Length: 333
Image (cartoon, rainbow, N blue to C red; front, side):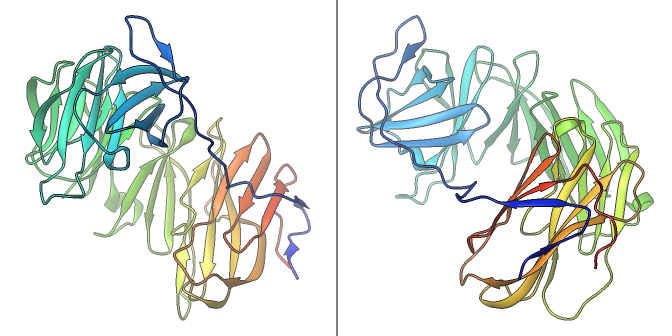
């Protein structure tokens, strides 16, 4: 029986929060003005923040807010496209699954024709000034809106993430230093000062926060690199995952971060999953909900999302909950 913590109000709702049916929409030719898609298409995919890629015949179109901003001259498969819309241009990486070629990078002016500008390169995001950040063979590259290479920013980068809300880049060096690029590099935090080892990873979160994770240790940083909250979980026997099946999910205000802790073999069999929340200043996460679960026999992902003070939680096993976090999680019993 599912038993939520006493101080969290839960409500089981009758429909999945994660399933969405996408019906065929329509398309029209691209003109000087943004045009709506108004004829049937064969595929529709979300292929980047704020970018939707649709397939019609052998060509693709990129939409922003339901309006076409780019339509390809060449032939592409939407399933192989990752697109990013900038102030004056569209950039997209294309992986052709039918060939052994590496991923190619294309740039096109809004409502213009695409041009291949590189191989083995992937778009990361557009800066506020309209420059394109990419991952390239040398690390991180900066290009202008036409695709011309401006400079190589970093040679030895272990991990990079783009922050859409800030139009900036976060990078973790091989020495373990977290930095931000927003036309200049700013040192934020050395992972060793937080107690993290060589397997640490990070991700930008809502509200300007940055999540840092390694094994049983989770920390959340503010935008300036100062510590927002952290938590350790004691070692357990068997499979044990901290945020590995939910990610770290911050609310829009950047005042709280939720995540799932999963115990047991998620490839099938019985285990348990719990929801935890971190608030500013916490050094131990508060348990909001926990229950036994019979895992589906497949790769799984627990969907966690905020709606004001409500935490929405859905699993592929069919469990869907809405939890009120305003009372605090209290002690689990």
